[in-house]
Length: 317
Image 1 (cartoon, rainbow, N blue to C red):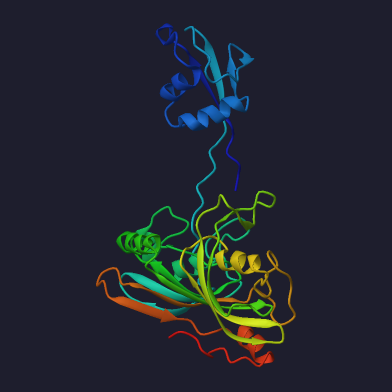
Image 2: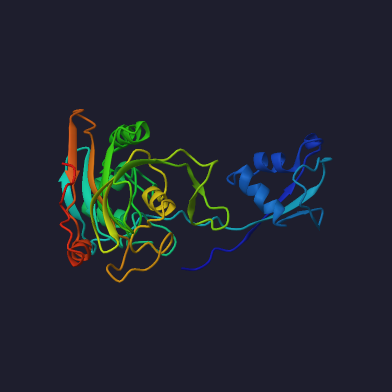
């Protein structure tokens, strides 16, 4: 695609503009660029006043000046690319929502390095009505998400009213979110509630950490089985913080198996041993409580079988 050339915009400041701020007057005089964009251009040195660079946003105009602004072309807004080559297992479809079984390794929405190979791209091809209902959105219908290497149940709204209903339920913490996870060590006590606030790690911004000034986070857990220095755990998210189960388990000294961020590599499984097992919520139109389960994927079943653990032992139904 050919690059769009930088455009020179020349303006003569009328005497009536005397006393006005430079950035404010430019924003009003130019048809198109926002004031925020004009401020960025001025700060970047794209403006000349009477032939000299001018970077002071608050400069007061005297009237009669000659301004020249180099307007770089605005980047084109990203567009969602449907990808029919990707397939996703559907657990439920109705007029309001889609329930999917997200495989481990699949990114949920487009981001740097993942323009067209995400869950959203797959669903856009399978259900064109979803992106159509959320125009200009790169995350149409998303009301929650799972980490790339977490597998399991996700719900996606098909229209804004359904999205609003589901988001309100997540915010009110009325959605039941049950996970299965294999962690290192023999967790004790066998059942408990972890209440520890979580915030951004100040040393490593891509990580989360237990922080006194973080957001409240609560995870209920129950050990279903233990073998060879591992614990198979049922975890219930009572809040929905980023990496919550991973951070809470690591904080107890029992990181999730295969977690390369908060733990370490494990030969038993090549990814994070965390699965969104069950999701229950109120159907937006009917108000009826509905629940969905995603079966454990083969790699997690193999890891448990190697330990002699029945993945269904003692779990909540």
